[in-house]
Length: 313
Image (cartoon, rainbow, N blue to C red; front, top):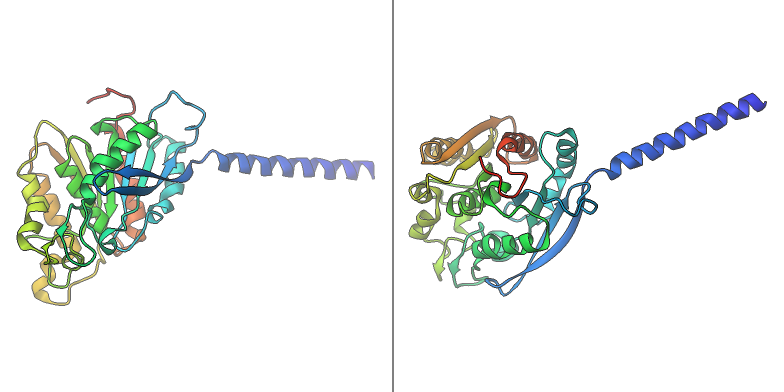
């Protein structure tokens, strides 16, 4: 009986140690926190969720690269939190360095701001969202968290409307971002189709008009590519699904997102200082495409992502 009790005790201890090990393993992952920073451009706070990697609270001398992750139209800052397990796993495996990930909320223009400074003055007037995020939020994050405050240590990424925003920020703000993770971007050339949400929310409007052709073309990527500074490397990783929504009008097939993404890639890789990758993967306009593209895009950027202040390549 004593041997049986002893054996049971050993099994119990092994079970407890195993459970402790599992908890300890889980605790090695990063943490998600919510915060906010004041934007002078908006006259209000910008709310965001931030991913802090394991060890951030302990190693107070270390500084980190930063991912800025922009959500799609109608979504919130919680959308990107689903990639936390991927970040935990890639960091633990050494596939990417420990990073911070800032996921801002964009409630303006009915959550259809397209991340630009809007001149629309009608109902639900446009706001200077681009200035708020690229100037005020980046400055706030650099002053509040232990970042590496240089372009080679920043990635801006997004999906759908956020993909359009990430592309614009990577091209229009080369001083801030060296890397752009552009997933199923809602970008159209020369103009969006008649039923596109880019026309509905005033992001590209002016005065009382919800949409203005000239404003859209001025803010869109063809105009930006022509003004790039070739001495500042810009690295784009573009991914799109092969089952994205197909425009029913054959005349609008040119605006299917897989077609538009290929056009973007072929234009971008010819621009001075730009290196671009394009991946067309199985799936539609959803996380079956965006999650693996996020993982593979970060793996692609890892060798060129600065992990120490002053690092250059």
